[in-house]
Length: 128
Image 1 (cartoon, rainbow, N blue to C red):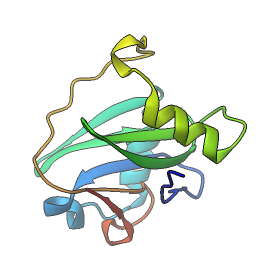
Image 2 (cartoon, helix red, strand yellow):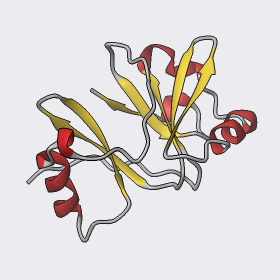
Image 3 (cartoon, helix red, strand yellow):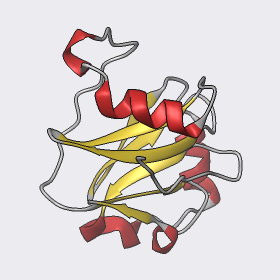
């Protein structure tokens, strides 16, 4: 049975940041407010040290599933159970799905952290 470590916020959006610059995110009130300004499912905040991917809209329970083509971020919006959600995330034919939104993000070839935008980067769960 597939599993994931679920990541939850204290009510605000989650952010996704490369490990090499994760300490730059301090979770200050200004950081948090800017992340909360993202009203779509995804948004990008540009910083001197790199881009911050914001998982906006609602503070949904979030996990990462390892697929053959790479890690997939899963946000639990509607599913009857953890098992069913993860099964769909692992076996869905991603190229046959329609995107709700699109956002072009330049990714680095490194580990990323996902954590509450109101927290310091040291609290991140790392995604490999």
